[in-house]
Image (cartoon, rainbow, N blue to C red):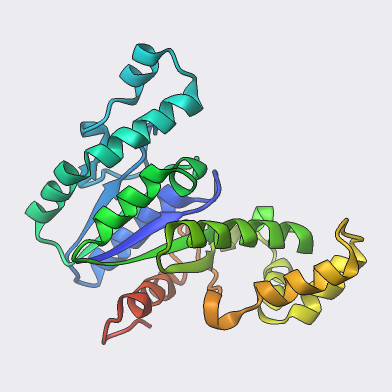
Length: 253
C-alpha cells in the first residue's frame, strides 16, 4: 500500500487537505481510503473510512486520569500506538492501493514522543510511506517566520526519520505577490537572506546566512507546490509529490 500522511502546524488545513486529496485520488480512479488519526478531534469535514476514535476514547482518558486537553491527547496517542496492530488489521481489510492519513493538530504529540515513531514504523511496515508537511502561508508572512515554520518541519522530518514533502497550503487566501515572495524564498537563499536583514531579524548576520543556505537545500526539501484544498487547485502536484517519494512509475501531473 502507498500511504501519505498529512502533518503541519495547528490550523494549517490538514483535515481539509486530507479530504480534498482523498476525493481527488478517488475521482481519478484509484482505490483510496482515509484514516483519521486524531483521537481528540470534535468534528471533521469528511467521513473517514477508518477512525481512530473507534479504538481510543479521548474523553474517557481525560476523565479517568484527570488530565487537561494536551495531557489527554498525549496519553491518547500513546494508546493509539498500542492499538496500531488492530488499526492496521482494519486497513488491510479494505485492500486499497492508497491511504491518506489525517494526523493530530497538536503535532508535537506525534513528532517528539516515542509513540510517534511507533505509529510511523507500524504504518511503514510492508508499505510505501511519505508525508506532506503543510506550510501555512499565514505563518510565513516574513522571512524569519518562514524559516521558523520550515525548520519546525525539518525537525519533525529528522525526528520521524521518514520521507517528507513540503507544500504551501491555503494558497487561495494570499495575494499573488505574497505567494510569489514565498516561492522566491524557497528557491533562492539570497532573497531570503536579504529579507532577513531588511526586517532586522534578531539573529546575527552570519547565522542568518547559514540558516538561509540550509533551508534551501533543494535536493533535501524538494519544491514547494502551492495547493488550495478549498478550491481543489493543484492537488495533482500534491499527489505527484507523494508518488515520487513512493517510487511510483506513473506520476502526476
